[in-house]
Image 1: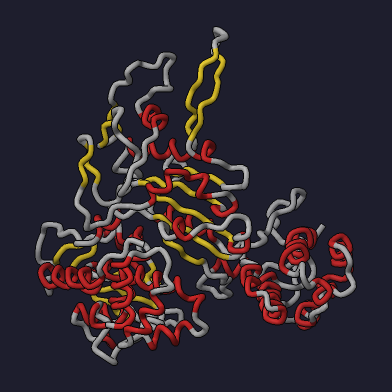
Image 2 (image 1 turned 30 degrees about the vertical axis):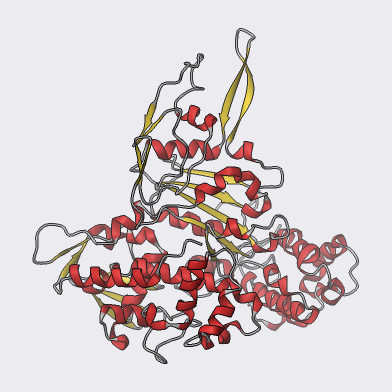
Length: 570
């Protein structure tokens, strides 16, 4: 788990804040103002010395620039605080009322120990830290005995941050939201730079550049099919200006037949023009982007792994698994064979002669020099004795459909080396989210039923069915907002809009419900329909009346979705 001492992080953050923060007027860098337009879900407009946030309810929050500077001192504290909470939540399945149990752990070391004993993959020292985290809130800044918010709350981080910064809770609470935004969206922290208004030279934020340069992203986004996991990655990379056009991105899809040789590389025979056969190392996507990242240390790179649990991830990574442990910000640089490896580099290395030789150009020409001469890529010089590590400018992103967990399970040792983040299954129906509203309002063929309305109702029924049949995993069977994407027909007239056709809906959505979500309880949902073929044919003539549940069958009659106008379906 690599949990750091939260008390030490808290103390260092406060000391640094008291030493370096100056009560003065500040000016934010133009790049930050141009690129950071939302914080904590609120739209931000910048003025000369303050920012103006507009909430979803059109309320205003006026934010002095000093708040941004103050927040920058407590980003690392927030990150470690969330690491502790994530570790504790690994014990969630062992307690019937987990939130209440966590709440009662405060000032109750014995109960805290019982919870921590259920946490897997942590050292004895880390267990001591976790017991203190649960039972002794003063150890990590959570408040005096009996006071403050307990850690079962989603906003428990607010009061500690404000207390450590010496701020009044009810008037300056947005500082904690800025801390959270910087910690969870490092691409925004990357732009954060400021100077004091009365000093001409730039004063770099104490947390800005170090967060990005030495803290690569290593995250798995998970959620139901179609909830927007890949879109989330694309947005993050776009905000960081990491693009495929600039050859900064490699994308792979794991599947049951995908193996280590596909991912890393393999020796393959090549027939030359003279008829001789030569055996060359053909690099896989991992090795190619690794080489690019080494060669360009001032440029960020990203390896995207789609459907990471549809392949045997442990076998695909092989011994590269140990590269996933990265050096922390507080770690001293390690010098090995004349090369320096600081924060953000892999903490451990692996020996791979093929990758080493590939980096040194062994397979680029007709003849392979023997011995291979050393070669410098960026800041690292490779020779026979230099092993492989992940550099700090290479981030790893992955997606995982929770409904596919039965394909290959990611073991705890593998998962704990990644940050895990669930993509919520939302599809907002308001003007503040135009793309989501447009998807919500898409009509399904000529039924007069909106996709968003159908999706909401069918997901309610899926969860109701799960409760009635005792199927706890049915939550993963819900339909994501982007499960089906509108498409323009090949013979559509010029200017015609993309639509969700009845045929596409039947072949994709109904098939999914028949084959997966309702496969154990089809009769309750589709009546006397015997086959998928019959279901699809029946939908063509009867529409949503194919559903037994009146909440669905009545959608096109009750006017909840309105009537589709100005459209036709061939």
